[in-house]
Image (tube, rainbow, N blue to C red; front, side, top):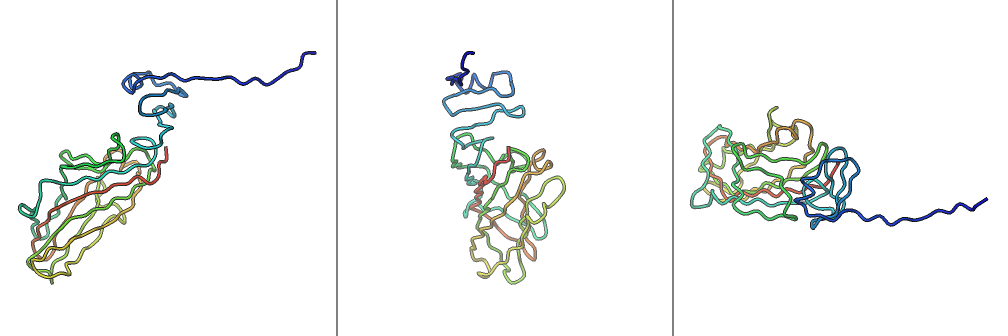
Length: 211
C-alpha cells in the first residue's frame, strides 16, 4: 500500500488595483492584494486584513478643524436655543487617507463603520459670555431619538465675564443600529445668557473594530 503524505501548496492571490477590486462581484471568501493592502470578503463586504488601518478595517483617527468661526467672526448662541456645533472640515488630518468619521453636510453628522464599533471623540472649542456667573453651556451628541444616553455634559464658565475659555471634552460611544443608519450630530446650548463660540475642533478615534 502506498504511503500517504501531506503536501503543501503555494497559493497566490490576485494582485489588482483598488479600482478593479471595487468593481469585483462580491464573493464570500475572495482574497485580493492591491496597492493599499490585502483584502477578503466577509459577510458581504470587503475587509482589509493588512495593514490594519483605515475605513472599514481596524482602528484609525481623524482630526477635523473648522475654519468658518474664528475669534474675529465667532458663532453666536442665543440664550436657551440649542444649535448645531458646526465644523466645516476646513482642515482634516487623518491616520489614513480612507478614514472618514464625520460628514459636514446639511446635518453635520459623526458616522460609524460597523455595528458595535467603539469610538472616542474629543470636542474642543473656545467660548465666552457677558455673564459668566449665570451662564453655562449644554453640550450633547444627538440623533433621531434625541440626546444619546451619557453623551451630554453641562459646562461652567469659570474665568469671568467676556473672558475666553477653552473647553475640551471627551466622549466614548458605540455604534448601535440607529447610529449606524442615521449618524449623530453635536449640539450646543447657552443657558442664562448669550455666548460666542469659535476655534471648533473634533478629534475622533476608532478604538475597536467589531467587523
